[in-house]
Amino acid sequence: AVERTLSIIKPDATARNLTGKINAYLEDADLRFVAQKRVRLTREQAETFYGVHKERSFFNELVEYMTSGPVVVQVLEGENAVAKNREVMGATNPANADEGTIRKDFALNVQENSVHGSDSAENAAIEIAYFFAGTEIVG
Ligand code: CMP
Image 1 (tube, rainbow, N blue to C red):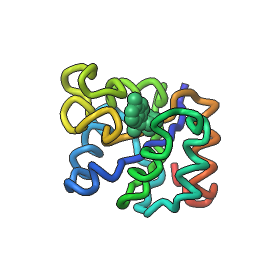
Image 2: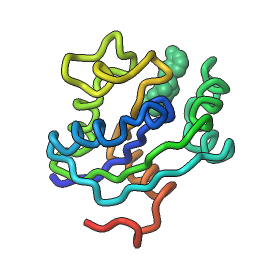
Image 3: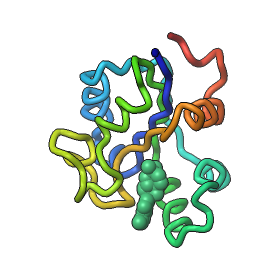
Image 4: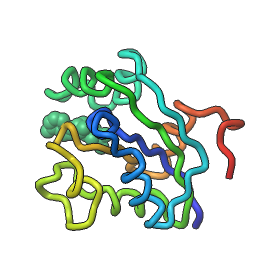
């Protein structure tokens, strides 16, 4: 089925001017950008977005990192978009990522891992609504 998922190009990647290169990996995987904007997350936005991780040891560091520079938030649309995006991203830790994935080719470490993608269709809907008004998404 055609789905939508939320993608974020993270501060380590925007700092290295990799937005276009990462977007090419996504488009080459038949994902279409139906919304995209460059923003600087506030601490409150990052804490809320990653709220599910708030008890994790890396939470404070994660919030610091995600607010350390600009990010590009995107809605991707395509057949099985959630799974397809996770496939092209590769494993969370780039040391475990498959050849040809975004994280294998660009991520620096398990935290500065260049991209985020929703982990389920249910979370995708929540994450998309967190960043985008319906009128900002143009399919
Ligand atoms: P993401 O897929 O956006 O979801 C949670 C983020 O937390 C993850 O990518 C990484 O940026 C970060 N993260 C996950 N595991 C660790 C870890 N063990 N140490 C530091 N950061 C982590």
